[in-house]
Length: 329
Image 1 (cartoon, one colour):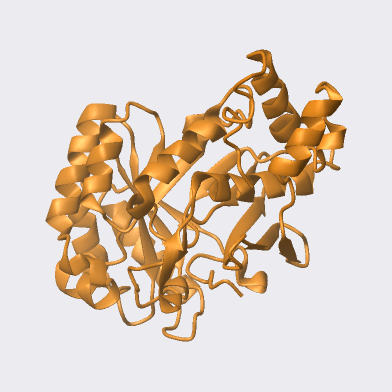
Image 2 (cartoon, one colour; image 1 turned 180 degrees about the vertical axis):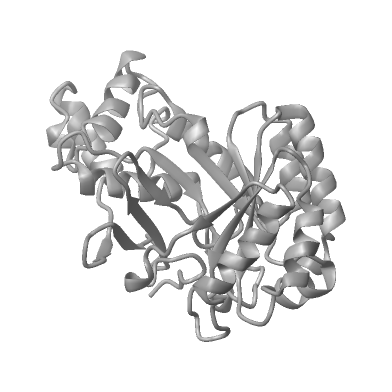
């Protein structure tokens, strides 16, 4: 799908662009014949030149709180996105790459290797798919977007930022930037660039270890970027934006969940605008998750140090759509 309508409309009045955006992103048309505001000749031109088809398969959890889609791209590569439904919001976890070059040991996506970056159109398509999925339910639309699916967003920086512009477009999807989050494994240059963008987006850091030695065992990217370098970039980001930053920490049994790890992490997380999100490891056949009791104890250590800490509850496991499980299946 191609959302660059400007070239097609270069000989048309300026208001046509707004009409088309509203038809695609608000009216959620799936055929140009449904775009009643457009003249017939333009409907026919768009029908020939811009396909609105999205090839996808859908997998829903038993209670339909989590829906995963497998989208088949024009070159037959596959990418996954996940819709998480809550009472007050519909959050889509989008992918930014086909596969991932980082090969974190706990993540199924990394085992695929890296195929290519997604274009901004291919990322937007994931949100559009779920808006179409929800359109038959009263007042239901995608409200939040998290770049936490397949791939490392900051290794596809330009396309990710272009996507955010499309998501935030008042004539289009109209999703506020404060409802968009980017999760990075710690690509320092990406954090530095984002700090200069002057947008109130949410930043999350996939940390998963309280020291460089353990982090290198879990995440090869740690061989390039030390925790100290990441925190320096994060602190500069906070200085410029005054935005809170979330640090994600996957709880893996007998690997990073000891009391010593908790105390070490607490000392790292002393900044008043840091917060920690504890995530139970989702099975990918490599490690075992920490027990709920162990996570509770780990969380208490952090709280005793005065750290703001939340716990992500299990979502998406039934459709292999949980954190670390996306593998294009």
